[in-house]
View 1 (cartoon, helix red, strand yellow):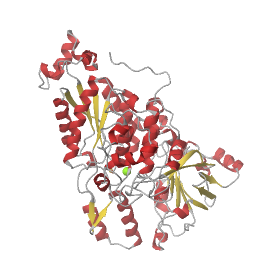
View 2 (view 1 turned 90 degrees about the vertical axis):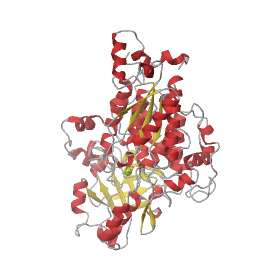
View 3 (view 1 turned 60 degrees about the vertical axis):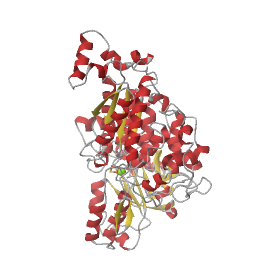
View 4 (view 1 turned 180 degrees about the horizontal axis):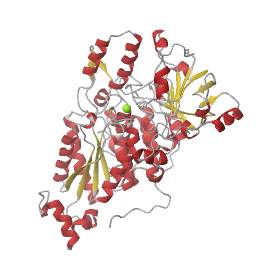
Amino acid sequence: MSDPNISELRSARWFSPHDLTGFIHRTAIQAEGFSKFAIKDRPVVGIANSWSELVNCNIHFKLLADAVKRGVLMAGGLPLEFPTISLGESLMKPSAMQFRNLMAMDVEESIRAYPLDAIVLLGGCDKTVPAQLMGAASADVPTIMLTGGPQEPAYFRGRQLGVGTDTWKYADELRAGTITQEDFNDLEASAKPTAGHCSEMGTASTMTSLVEALGMCLPDTASIPAVDSRRAAAAEATGRRAVEMAVSLGPRPSEVLTEQAFDNAITLLMAVGGSTNAVVHLLALARRVGYELRLDRFHEISKRTPRIVNVRPSGEHLIKQLFNAGGISAVLKELGPLLHGDAITVTGETLADGYRNAAEPDGEVISKLEQPYDASGGIAVVRGSLAPNGAVIKRSAASPELLKHRGPAVVFEDIYDLGRRIDDPALPITEDSVLVLRNSGPAGAPGMPEWGMLPIPERLLRRGIRDIVRISDARMSGTAFGTTVLHISPEAAVGGPLAAVRDGDPIVLDVENQRLDLDIPDEEIERRLADVELPAPKYRRGYGRLFIDHVTQADEGCDFDFLRKLPDEEPQRLPY
Ligand code: FES
Ligand code: MG
């Protein structure tokens, strides 16, 4: 390549010098069987691959990485793939969220330490996408993302399943006695038919969709099914674009991840009825580029954004049908009046340039703005004496009649206490009760696991009750549903007022007026909090200890306090 920018490439600092260090760097690449020609005056594109046999959702990423490499080579670059730790939502204990920041650090430092001019991020399963974005944002080398795509729909008894959503539903039916264990075994066998992330608008599909709204991937690529040949073609195109970004030295993540881009992402989040987990991830990502995104911004945008996507868990269909109806590009196009269409994306063009030729709403999976499935967005923010720094509720997946509710608390100290007592016949619980789970937040659990969709007691299930108000400092799966208030901040384990609740205390939820209150005198709350003995930290050493010592609260994104961008931070020009 003979572009004038070639000598300014980061990789040139490793490979160009005619001295001993240049010699050592070049021989490291030649040792892999590359010729001198392969590294001379050529941009190096790093492919951060979250493939792992422990992460079924990302199991097809070797094929995608090959397609990215093909694109890089076609455009004259040198592709070098590298692994990072990967986060599998289903298998990782105690919670994949506990390792999001670790993966982000791995990605950031891999990018910074190696001779890479542009990065392709390959992510899919829930936490892999925000972790990669956060790491890349901090490293701030030109970066483009390729997400893995949704798995094919599963079928059970002739009915299409949303893997997460329907698993929860049928698990309740099993406990209620309306289906048999044999039925449930059949469901298990058919639940996950292919590679790819969860097939409904859970956290993975939400995050991959937001990548498109943020402008961090090629337009029209977020919802292509994992096994569709068009995804490999998108991978090839992503590789080609990465070379252009390397040569033109941008755009960098800090140039794409602007305040406008976050507004666009939040607007899309509300329009698709997306996961509450996205709130935490966007709050964290924003702080990586020095933008103090506020929790209340989600509520403001939610109020003005109708839900126009009919996909589970808020609607009926799966991402596959959304793709066939025009995909995220079509949704963005219809949302156009509510977006900053002039936001710059990794293409070097604007967001609006990317969706200009997208399909019109089909009225079945994507509606027109004027005829939405819900008049306002899926996620609301509440505050009050129980959540001074806020909490969230996915109102699109809640029972409308419970969004204003007053009821007596039934308190569980942690998930183990809950497991022991939830079906205890002596538990004073009715459909008016408010289930309270505490010590399940970022520092307390730790890692803020997806425990927030507390199970309904069996005796209520058998009476046909499928929802009651539940509140916690935990998160919940993006595929879950119910009237569940989540992310209560500050959490109980750091002395938040959730720690003061006692059995029988009246709790008032009023989503319309954005309130969540413990209806006892403030002095009584303070008196009780002064007496509360905080639980001992769950880890005394290692990464768990680092996590507890440095994780921020949910309303700041649960990143480590030392990873947010500093106000006076200079662009890094490391290691040379
Ligand atoms: Fe990986 Fe749902 S388990 S995306
Ligand atoms: Mg999930």
